Image (tube, rainbow, N blue to C red; front, top):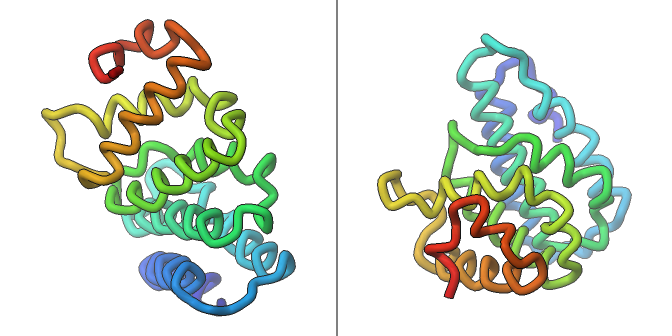
Length: 174
């Protein structure tokens, strides 16, 4: 936790990644206060000024991955209404694109709990969906997440007909 506030962006980046993986893989029974403390320390990671060192942007992507892992561990302990605008506002993850994998797993989980956590943010998410599905770009989400995303798009299309076609994602609908 101390490393999350280190002066060096690279240390903060590694701390955010490590903490997210630790939370996701531990057998600890987490409390709301634990998650609040983590989220409080990660919040500044999402406010990266123009011209900041690359490590600061990498730290932001790792913080997004950490927040995603908190959601995956226990979404009920995350104040989603205040966290999701910040998390989705950090997209696309370009400096550490592998953090898209836990991010997308979190999106799938959130949609299964309550579609509003995805549908209310479609303006931000549609370009991200298009980006990770683009066959001309490197794979950032893996085959399992890609299959789950295609299924999610079909579900979204059923709830918001025409929205994905209008955004050029019609070719991905089953």
